Image (cartoon, rainbow, N blue to C red):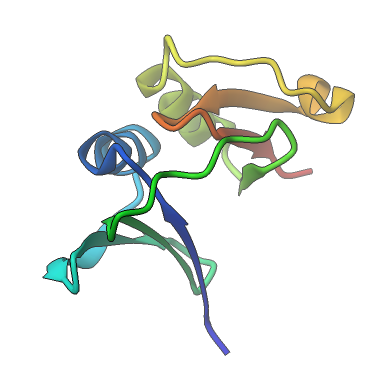
Length: 120
């Protein structure tokens, strides 16, 4: 089994820049004007999972919820801090007190939180 998490966005170009250039996820591919949709696939290295972002189709993006978070775990704090530096200016405070203590938190262009956690 493989896993792909998909989410719709109204800001596809900004989302790609955030996850590709900021977080450092490699783009695996994408599509344009497939039945009115455009999309991009990003790899989550080492996990066997992917992120897919789509736009179009006459649908708007979902509203972010403070409990709908993407948690990325790192073995290397230097890598985590490097990503945090690239995401500077997008910092947020998670609603969950555990994440406030254990994660570096950032909002993507849609307002969804991405948490960078050092694996213990």
